[in-house]
Image (cartoon, rainbow, N blue to C red; front, side, top):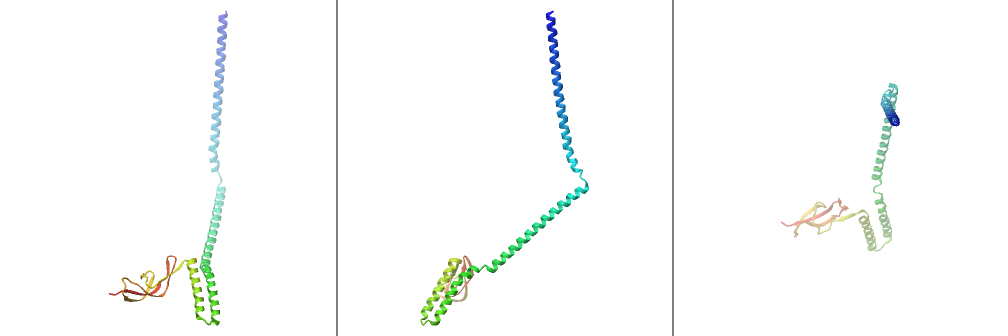
Amino acid sequence: MKDKKNKHEESEEKETVNESEQTSSEQAAGESQADSTEAKNEGEKAEAKPEEQKEKSPEERIAELEKENADLKDQLLRRAADFDNYRKRMMQEKQDAFDYGNANLLKDLLDSLDNFDRTLDAAKDAKDAKSIADGIKMINKSLVSMLENKYNLVAFGKEGDAFDPDLHEAIGMQEGKVKKEELAAVYLKGYKLKDKVIRHAKVMVVKPAE
């Protein structure tokens, strides 16, 4: 009897375990199905959004396009105004550079002009011409020094220098006892601004005798 009772109890326990496992499986399947349904609903909602956006009325779409067009016109007008202001500013700066580009040079020349005025005033009562000549030489030396040191203006052209058509303008030519063409006389000095010739020297050239 005890064996039958034990077997009966074991059978009941197995049935209980099977029912529990079946219930858990059904719950898991239900939850999985619920999750799948929820995901499907969310996907349908997500797919529905673009459709909702496309469902704007023609009037609303026209209003949006008109607003975009107005914004683009406003940006274009602003940029055109900025460019016009920039162009005017550049033109004004260019004109100022042309009108006042030599202001610093002219200001530096005023000292030399003042010295010439003083020399002329002193010459009225001077009895010695040498003192006047010395005063003019001092003014010349000061002026040349200022132009060379501050503005890189360099004079060139001395008797005996080799003749260079890129630097010298020959206003006459003669033959002499020389091996190559050189300057016999300098009538007007030449000047360079840095490396650029701004005035050619006017010279007499002597060339080898034939």
